[in-house]
Length: 243
Ligand code: NAP
Image (cartoon, rainbow, N blue to C red):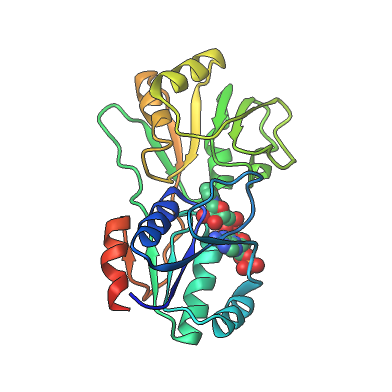
């Protein structure tokens, strides 16, 4: 295809898409929010930092000719996804949402779905040892928990944290045996996660099933209306040449 593709990134899918496009000789610019101190960088050109809301992204798209935008941000990056839909609508730049499917329960799973981190905090009341794998932002929702909390994130989490928090810094992928060992070591009795989907961080769900632990799963925010959406990098690559 001709023209530049802007990939809104921060996910493994975004990196794989950028890799495939660079390999095909496509001019690709990957955009990262800049949240992670030492991000895994995709090949090709990379920019880091917010655009400045809908107005900022609209101005950016007007100033930088762009053949298409692929929003490959995380399923919970709802603000960026909404801004991309609005700015592409205003500028007429074609937009595709690339979002991996959520997880599906298997026999033996005890999943309790909630709509927000605040609801997740309510759902774990009464448990004694909570494994929080919801990422380093938004932990304030759990600050009132008196249970022991094991917090795992890539970079140090932002306070406020639950008063009895133990922080483990680690970046996936994780194996089932790693997750089993960690959950046993901390005598975890409930796991909290966002429905991020994908294989990189799914081992905790397998481990929870094996240990017969309940999992509180935060539902994804809805997708913006009218934006074509695909679930795989291959489908995104198939959509792009027509733009
Ligand atoms: P968000 O709440 O939707 O975004 C907040 C603001 O960050 C946006 O308004 C935008 O700032 C900026 N931003 C987000 N993604 C960007 C990108 N790819 N390029 C440039 N600016 C970006 O998103 P978030 O939840 O903070 O996630 C930030 C990044 O981390 C995303 O790239 C996402 O893919 C990745 N991530 C998120 C999660 C999660 O659970 N949320 C998990 C793993 C990875 P302006 O308004 O100034 O443009």
